[in-house]
Length: 144
Image (tube, rainbow, N blue to C red):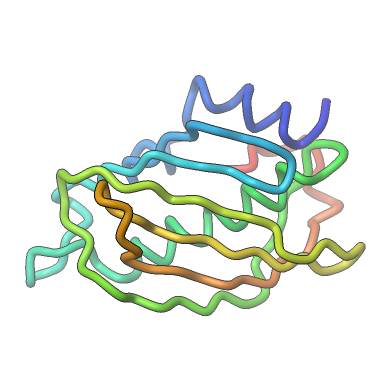
């Protein structure tokens, strides 16, 4: 089973983590994932918008999953660096697309890019991440 196959398998039964965030895997190809995101009210800050930490978490999850989708077998990836740019507020109860793409694949370090776009296709946030394969985490724990 490849990493992409594994992600397709767990897409039908999301982890509690993904369910809490309101994320659902909708497409998986080697080196690319797409998620549907409908953040709930519990993720908002006092200003009434989704807290930036949750946006960063969604982007980080997309980066990790996209790295996993490119692996030859189910492999966890650990984020070593995450740089996030916030461009527009993310609102609870609205639908967003979170997409991740591998931009460089080395043996010990993988670079990924992820975006959050609204229903109109406008970029709300983006992240670039550096991840390392956790070879001790192969096949033991779901990628999400």
